[in-house]
Amino acid sequence: GENVEQHPSTLSVQEGDSAVIKCTYSDSASNYFPWYKQELGKRPQLIIDIRSNVGEKKDQRIAVTLNKTAKHFSLHITETQPEDSAVYFCAATSSNDYKLSFGAGTTVTVRA
Amino acid sequence: GAGVSQTPSNKVTEKGKYVELRCDPISGHTALYWYRQSLGQGPEFLIYFQGTGAADDSGLPNDRFFAVRPEGSVSTLKIQRTERGDSAMYLCASSPTRGGGYNEQFFGPGTRLTVL
Image (cartoon, rainbow over all chains, first blue to last red; front, side, top):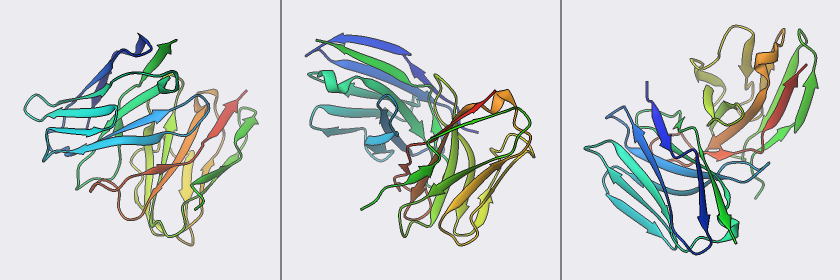
């Protein structure tokens, strides 16, 4: 099955700086990569996703890049704000599958 | 509209007891998933329903775990003879059609299960 690894496990950044979270996956059949944000005590919420037919996708301060050859994808948050503090999970699946395989999560803390 | 809801939000039980966790998916969503999230980890797949049938229960850890979705809407996850290792957050998610295939899975707030 799919194995997703995520780094770093914790990330502390100064407000206004950028944050980068990296994930690798093992199954070359995976072609859909969502990112979820989970605030303390809240449900995971999708913030951005990318399909394997594109290499990059951007939505305001958030961007995701995908390298299919190397089987890794990354989340980039620019101009971080205190409300960006949360746990971020990457995940992978394929269009022939349905279950999401998640990374272990990255706890992001934005220092004011 | 209303999102995925789960009840109870917290459940404390004693080792050996039976528990039921309920999930109400978004209305009209045919696909429903259960995940288990241990502290400091990402959610792990347990079971997937397409309509009323369990299409994939390969993530259930053992035969103490069972889930049903009799009318293709509400689902109940049932755990028999609970063990301390079952303590975790149990998350339910739903999607309009089959997940993967670029269909977003919408998560509920979870049930925090604690087995004493």
